[in-house]
Amino acid sequence: MVVMIRASAMFLSIVILLGVCGCRASKPADKETEVMELTFSFWEPGMAHELEDALQKVADGYEELHPDIHIELLPQAVETYQDWIKSRLVSDDLPDIQSNHGTNLTTQYNAGMILNITDMLNSESPYEKGRLWKECFDKRHLNNNTAKEYKYIPFFGTSLGVYYNKTIYDELNLQVPDTWDEFMANCEAIENAGKLPIAFMAQKFDACSWIKWEIAGGLFARKHLSDPDININGDLSVSSYEAYRATLTGELDFTKDVEYQEEYREYVKYLREFLQYCGGFPGFEESVAKAMFLSGEAAHIHTGSWDVQGIMKNEGIDFEVGIFQFPRFTEANTPYVGKRISNLSEQSIAITKSVYKEEGKLEAAVDFLRYLTSKEVYQQFINDTAQIPVVKDIAYVEGTEVFKIDGYSHDELLLKTEGDTIIHEILSGKEPILDDRFFKQMQEKLIAVASDYAQKHNLSAENGYYLEETPNGVFEDEK
Image 1: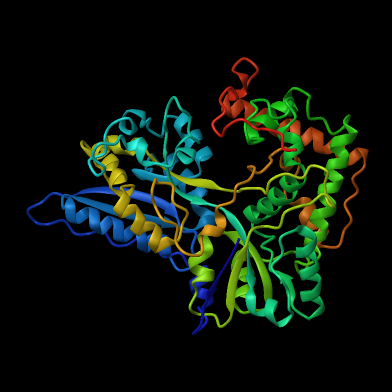
Image 2: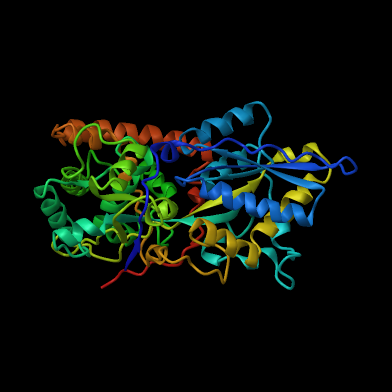
């Protein structure tokens, strides 16, 4: 699926690309009314503060209904958010409401910092009469918690795509690629025309993970999903828990299993093919890569749905922008052809133990989140941010339907084996030596990481590595 939007006028400044503005000033209390303040932290993924502006609109609407409550937004930069949260945690000053990855919220929950909100979700929302609060959410998103207890709610969905310069495509008479080989052929033609094919954010950890998801998953997800020794719970995802379980039980051993070694070599082969069109070592910082794309210097950038506003709806560029799903692999690339990889995930929201510091804060925090996720308010939030909705019966913003990919979740098995080292080696022109010594060192690191992860998350054979549930459905091998 392809979506194209025309943009024109002045180019946005790099300052806007880089900045995440500070917190807004607190609303002064009315002289006759004591105002309770709820703090709400999140990271700003957009380039023009779209999330903060949209949430401010939500907060203003809530405060009109509840003049005795003030919502203090605490937006932070993506790169420093986790350290900022850790510092607040150490000083016992967590925000009352926190947006974060579900895994990070689960870790805080296990440490007693996040509240169990199961009872709240199982009660009726005053903004959606006749429905339990949990019934307001799209089930596939809410069920990424567990069916037994809820630590957080979904905030909005995120997914990945390839943004491309439609003007360059038209000038070179290129077609939007559907397959990997078509994509690589386009990149070659663009390079021959003197343009940079891909502005790859190699200095951004997440961006390195994304391309590894796409390549490793696209090549081998179907194989790993149909392997009962790896996809132990038989669902639609090879998760971190399953990858670490396979390591700890010896099912995944790169020192003994030649087949896994060959898989890894094949993965690196396609990673190298992609990286040859990415500009060389050391790769670009996020802001630089986006500036190169927006200035027309680069033809593609691989990034997420959170950039729709900043890229596709950017009125500061003078060329046409489109987006396509990451190209699929075919039988010419892999014998394990299946669906595309769907990188749909959620940003989540939790209530922290800080609400216990003031009477009535817990009830106010729950009420605000119910207001935020009520249909009318949430639809406006989605309209303002162009994020992927997680609430039922909410329309997608034009330009985001491309992220509706019916595919497998990304495959974690090969991704646990190394960080960004190989990506940076390839970008620097080095040829990774994938010999017995390499796989021995990789296995040792994998075991160390798996053991540490299992200890932190209490994973063991006794509790089945928490893999008894199948929240995403049962995998059926495709013919």
